Length: 168
Image (cartoon, rainbow, N blue to C red; front, side):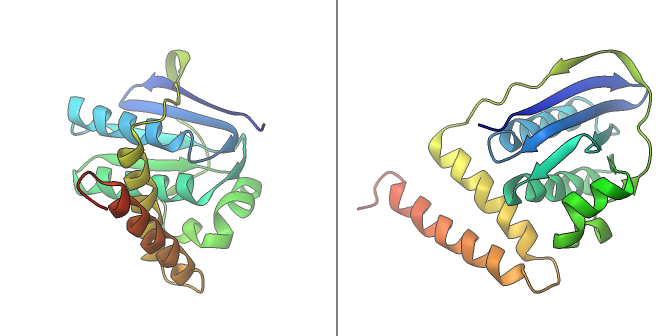
């Protein structure tokens, strides 16, 4: 089993999130909840995601980054992804997220120690909806892969609808 470590530290204006290893749908709901809580606590927050130590991201985690950026920017907050050229090519270029996400080369200084963000899987319907939302965000991107993400989101939506209470 490939591991992922997501750690968070305070910065002068918000938070620095460091992602190491293999980032997948297992970690993305916790990151999404963290972003929502940080925004609720401080609407002018800044969240910087350092993916330089990350080796791999699945489509759900990539979609989570995109939805996090959209949510924060829409609310007037700041969102950046810290990459070097190797991380940009390895993680973002294939999906063209390198042209959509706000990328910067260096991380803000952290204040204090990093703490681990625990990846707790939400309830089945919430988890499924998170995966659907992540893939719908990717489906909105221009490019040859958008239909693949749309197909995944559509299939997962059908499966979720069948599992909702009252469905046969």
